[in-house]
Length: 205
Image (tube, rainbow, N blue to C red; front, side, top):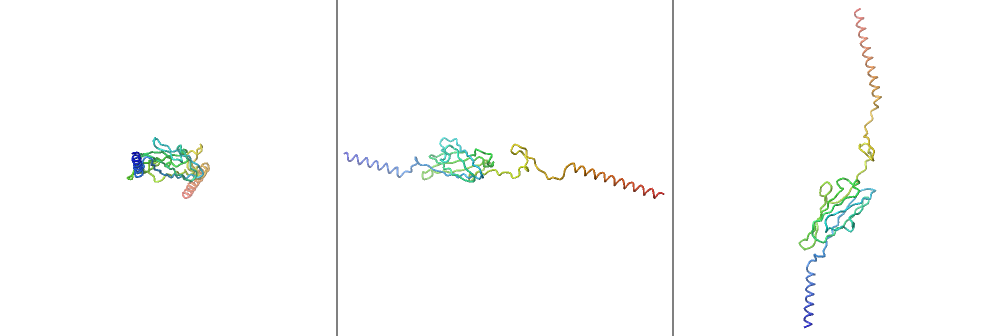
């Protein structure tokens, strides 16, 4: 009897193991999604904040608390890991927004995680920039410095920049020149009229 019970127990254990081996392990499965973050800001190290309101969303290992940094024109790959289906939403933005072009200051990242036909986790990602357009890549570009800020007008560094105009001469010199031309013109007209009257008087005599 004991041998039969032991055999039955062994058969049961083998059968249970075969079920686990032949059935997709959906409980311990995860899907990892690499996301490349590119930066083009010469001579600067920019800090970034990744945030989410989803309780089931995990932060990548490269941004354990949601913060990370990138220097110059380097790039960083964030590895997002998901363990269950769902629609996950993240917001990615630089901490120093004044160094980044306006359309690239904020990225909304959506990740849809689902089971495929093989009962395995799959994912689809989409990203939208600050202007509301979907993009194929996530990149941050720096604001190009103005080589001649005085020509642009506005306030620069707390001081008002004066817009420059072509120099055509001082106002005082222009007034003096106009007055001189006016005097010469009056003298010419007066001399002409006097000469005309003199000639007319001689003809009468």
